[in-house]
Amino acid sequence: MLHRLRFIPGRILQAIPVAIGVTILVFMMSHLLPGNPAVAMLGNHATPAAVAALSKHLGLNQPLWDQYWLFLVHLLHGDLGESITYQQPVFGLVMSAAPVTLSLVLYALVLSLIISVPLAGWAASRPGGVRDLGVRGYTLLGQGMPQFWTGIMLILLLAVRLRLFPVSGYGQTPLDHLYYLFLPALTLAISMCPTIIRSLRASTIQVLGSEYIGTARSKGIGGASLFRVHVLRNAAIPTVSIVGVNLGFLVGGSLIIEQVFAIPGLGSLMINAILSDDFPTIQGVALVVALFVVVVGVLTDIVYTLLDPRVDLANTEAVR
Amino acid sequence: MTTTPAPTLTPPKARRRAVRARSLRPWYRNGSLVAGIVIVGGLILVAVFAPLLTPYSPTTQNLTDVLQGPSAAHWLGTDQFGRDVLTRLIWSTRVDLRIGFMAVLIPFVVGTVLGGLAGYFGGWIDTVVMRLVDIFFAFPFYVMVIALVFVLGAGETSIYLAIAAVSWVSYAKIVRGEILVAKQQDYVMAARLGGFSHLKVLVRHIGPNVLSQAIIYAMSDIVQDIMAIVTLGYLGLGIAPPTAEWGSMIAGGQQFITTQWQQATIPGLAVVVTSLGLSWLGDGLSDLLSPDRRK
Image (tube, rainbow over all chains, first blue to last red; front, side):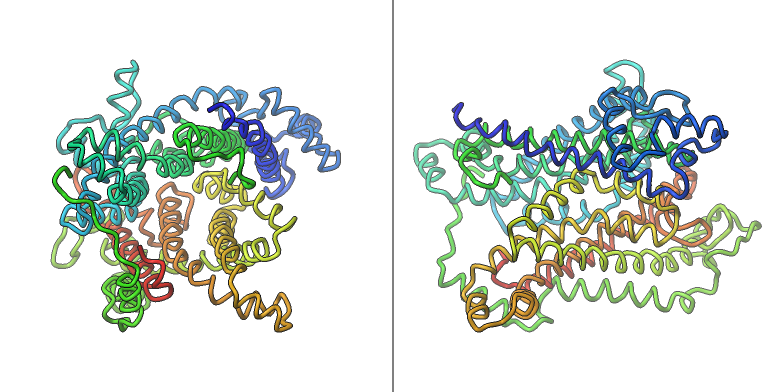
């Protein structure tokens, strides 16, 4: 068991250049801005004194490489710059918004699995049948609907017409959050499910055709326990990596959906920053989200290995 | 699922015959291809002939007729500026389809070339390209697109560049994977032994065989690009306001969702129909271009 985890240090080492690349890319964004980055970052507050101070802080009179180094040093001290609109350190803003986004993403993930697993099993039980066609129709439609529009339609149906859920907001207590975040999480789940269902349906069909399922059936195992113990555990393995890869998609989507439902997460922070020309905040959100995706990539590979004894990333040449 | 027998595996011979039957089937017998062509072709016609299809202007405001419900004069009603919703819906097709189709061009070329070089030559080129892919892949699509549109300034060019910066990655991955497989094939070895240069082998021999997957992917990529444009429009970061565009129409309609629900609903349905058409076109093309890959 443990020997299969030998790949972890190597996998983490492999993630480091990617993380560094992410910081370089985000750093370069400030130089793509028209004009002096310090002026652009200060926006309306660009007095000559403030520009001079920020230029010195960012090392703008030094070579690009030294500027990047300074950016990295600041980053390691948790200094992502100062938000123009809030007049507060970006790091604090991002850290207070991140848990909201993270809980929305996890909520959406849980809902996606609750919806996808039965639907995929249902569709796979008789490929080509009516139920299968129905589920496949949904996967086609689900990917064709713009996420924010799905959200608006859910608001229209479940909040405005049926008054089952609040139209927007986040609530006060944890229980409130669960209630308020249901529609946004469902919105994300509706667009996430097609990807999961497609993968799970295909692998379930494959597993159902394998000999050990025939053996299990002939031993008299059937129904839910056959599906849970013998089918799902094996069929779920490829889906884990699909989910891992698409978690970034879920994060990206949640940024948009937060705007639809007025949830105070990273998305609202980023979009409001864009509407008020608050570059340091945009930079901060982009950086934190991308680094999060890199970490999730490493975690996915670890979970994948733990789940499937046949995967031995330590012994394969290319980890990816 | 308790009583259904385990599906039997298709014997290879029958499978091959089925594949051949599919590939020899004339294109017009291919359901998804025909559905895709009809929908996408129809949308293109609507876009081209937009000015002839409606008597109204998509942008001129008519403040005496604001927020009307559907009527004989305005089939889908009017918006908060008194503009005919159907007219704006039709004119949006021009903007959203054009940008959606154009936006795949740069990433298609850049991703195919980089992925092709990485897969064919391997070694350090492969390492560099794949690390770049990993880095760009870390940014969720919308995070990168939104940040870049901000950095590059609003406007159509920025949208193209921002989408290109994100989506070249998928083409590079697909083409690299295809080339890694194609490289092992005998015909490539034969071409090399025949004295052809690397460039000629890549372009003349491998190219046509690996491009089909990239073309099939491009169909779903157009869908993704249209989603991006519509989303940017919804957020107010896309095509500037008076121009009719599905995303900004939905944003406008959302304010009146309690009284005029159709204003936010219908432009979204237009997006759904467009992506359905493109998905079917992609499915149909994949039957046509690589029949052996299907299931």
